[in-house]
Image (cartoon, rainbow, N blue to C red; front, side, top):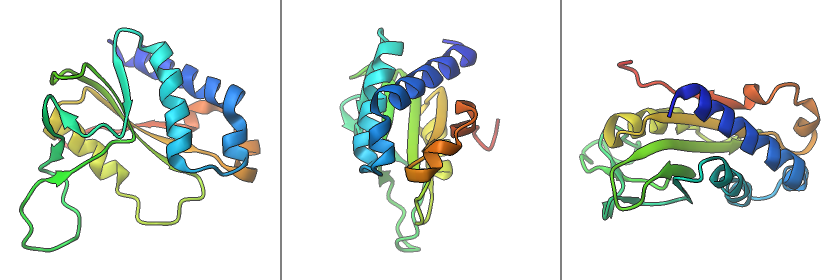
Length: 158
């Protein structure tokens, strides 16, 4: 699947989320609730694929990133187990099309999504990686172009 089609499908799903479930954004609902609804609309755009939220398997093995290291301990050399917000893939295979990490516009913590997305591409072979921002509360009224809220992440070596 070409990048332009993937981007178009994500934007269509995002539009459906805003149209049908915008109240989740207005109410500043939990990020997992919002990503779940986005995943439902993504499934409609990617009917030949499995769309899952917080799926922690790579084939039958736990999904781990080698090149993403959280600042836990400097001597920790183990891979980090990960639960991506949304993935588009074929279950029980290593056929990984798309990974999405999402944040609400009012998120104030340390944002490691860009690093994680690059690691998903490098370590697990995801073809595409996107960061999606959900505008919540008053930010919802500021939307001009959906493309401003869907950002593709490239690997550092691309």
